[in-house]
Length: 503
Image (tube, rainbow, N blue to C red; front, side):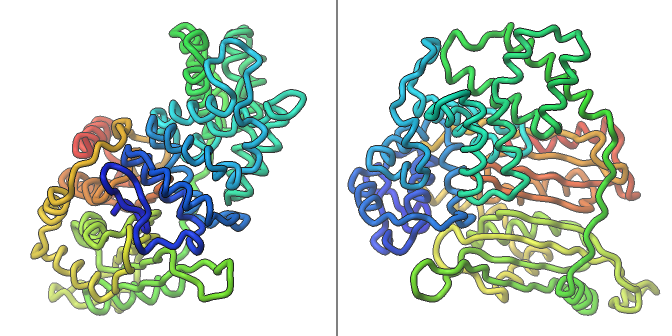
């Protein structure tokens, strides 16, 4: 099995016997993403069956469809043959009607190697190797796919593309803030290269003008990565070390301007009523307490809503090893982590369980997970809790179990992902050291990160995990045993240790 309803057979990706393409609207994107990530061709029979049964996705798209599109775009070179197979049977234009205007469209500038549609896909291929440089790799890949979409309309393609990109982003389910970022990046995708090669970078007005158009550091890093990907996908004459140095210099100066105003650190949100109830119960019993809720999406035809994921809440008294244990248990149960949040909360001491030493436990960890089953049915909360108890007391050897499972599966060629990147965000918080991890999502990834942090003997005060397509973008707020941020050298050593563990 590669994904729900998708299997490998004789070196090709085919539909499982139980697959129902007429009911599973996301199946074409899921099959394409699975094929690209595995580095396998998708069978012609499967594509034709998907095309014959395909129905329009609801607008906005369900979250799974958006995730699968991003996963497909992020697979690198393997994306191209899978995309072409879908395009040949009309599936791409069914999902993205605006694609028809650029399909097989010739370029006006001879510097381009590819037609407009192939150039857009090639730009996504190039962008997939730059995803570690940005905080939102999903936005980078979507911007790469859409940056020249305006070439199918009259007038300035950047101006037309801004409108189209906003509409497409809305269609596939991005929120208003992300839609605005995508529209801005598409509108100004030529801004950095044009300014760097045609303007005086020593003139303050040049840098100020770019900063005013970009607006934020997050948008700037997306533009920087897209500029390089776009040039590399254009042709050998479009990018050089000289052009790269000019763009890097411009980006550095614009970033300094955008970072001039200090941003206040947001206040953490108060626990919900259910989180508080679970925390009190965990404090009273001295063990983990779980609540599991299936998330559903309304059916498009008459019928019952079907589960598409799980919201899992875990509360337990603060103790070492919580993060790797919980993440490892989820990996053992074949649950893919889409997002996670970990934080510590203080509760009145009288609610706690007496430790026998004259003090009572008052700090509880709250873990909020959004997960999805890789395939098959969703797990039961009782089984998750039992395995979590065993993982915490050491009777469940998670690393060995995960290694046994990996050894039992045949090794597939798959895609060559860029290496993981772990950095320290020096000004992200005054209360903790923030470790940022950008890596290829894989079973057990969060478990390995948690083990590396535990081995470094740092305390994880909060964690913010997000999976964007095939990319994991995680931030961990850590302190030393006295609850203070790490010294600069210790923080750098910690980042290197986590990166080594992931390699």
